[in-house]
Image (tube, rainbow over all chains, first blue to last red; front, side, top):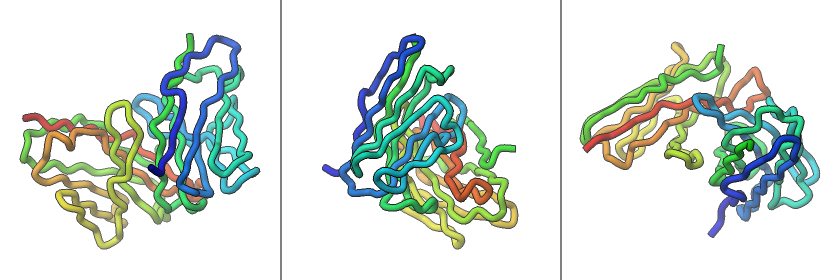
Length: 114
Length: 111
C-alpha cells in the first residue's frame, strides 16, 4: 500500500527536551511538508522540502528543525526552544512543489507537554 | 484579517437534508481552491478541487464566486458518514502561493 506514515501517534515531551517526529512516504513524491494544527485554527506550515537535501522555512519555523537526507523521509524535531509545542502535527507530500497541487497527509502525531 | 475564513458551525442536519456553507478568502489573486474533509482526530483528506465553472462529485457540489471571493460546498441527501469538519484551502498569492487553510466548518448529520 502506498502512503504516508507518521510515528509515534502520541508523543509526550518533558520541559527542555527535544523530540523527533517521524514521517515516511512511499509515494515517490518529491515534495514534503510539515504542518501544525491547533484547535480552532487552520493548519500552519512549519517547514517544507522540494527535494532531497533541501528544505525551506514555513510560516512558523521557530523552535523546529528538519532534515531531508532521503526522498522518503522528512523528520521533524521539536526543540526546547518551541515554548508551546502541544499540537497535532501533520506531515504531507505531493508529487512536486506546486502549491496548487493536491497534498496527501499522514495520520498525524499528537504532541503533549508533560 | 485571515486569508481564509469559515463559519465554524456546527451545522446539525437530519439525514437526507441538504446543507451548504461558504468560505471567504481575502486575496483576489488566489488561483487554486480545494475542499478537504477531516474526521475527528484524523488527517485531512481531499474532498474535491474547486474549478471556476463549479463542479460536482456525486452528492457534493462546489462553487467558486470570484467577484465576491468565496467558495461554497453543498451536500445533498446527507448521510451519517458525512459528519466531519470541512476545511477550505486556498493558495495564498501574498505568501508565495503557499496553501492557506481555513479553520473548518463542522457538519453533524443526525439519524
